[in-house]
Amino acid sequence: MAKAFASQGDMSEKKITFDEIGKDIYAFTAEGDPNSGVLIGDESVMIIEAQATPRLANKVIECVRSVTDKPISHVARPHYHAVRVLGASAFGAGQVIMGDTARAMVVERGQEDWDSEFQRFPRLF
View 1: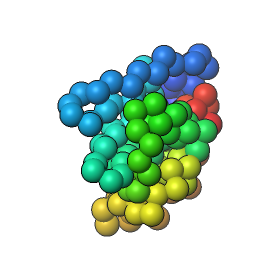
View 2: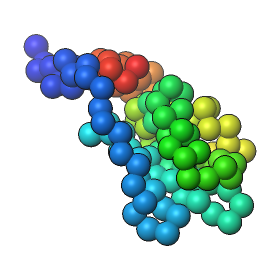
View 3: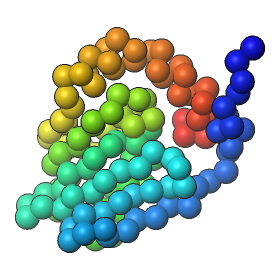
View 4: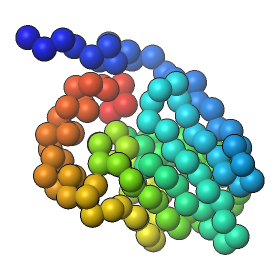
């Protein structure tokens, strides 16, 4: 029998931080949960890593709204794992950026990855 992930039993809320790490560059973190980057441009905002669900993505949006009212125009999804991409729809961005390799991995492993991540991180879903 496979050993269970420690995260399976972790149902506690995580402390969210939203720190400016450079001029108009922010890090959204939550104690080991998937992170997101926020880049504020002259006219709009780009999010890097979309979070596991729209509910979690809305926490990122709340933080973004605390520093700017510029529209979120781009979401970059450099990773294929479900805990990093399924929240993309919440941002309402006109452009979603994902490389061919990551996109192919979603197609190839999408359901398998969803099943694995759902078991591994039940708190997120």
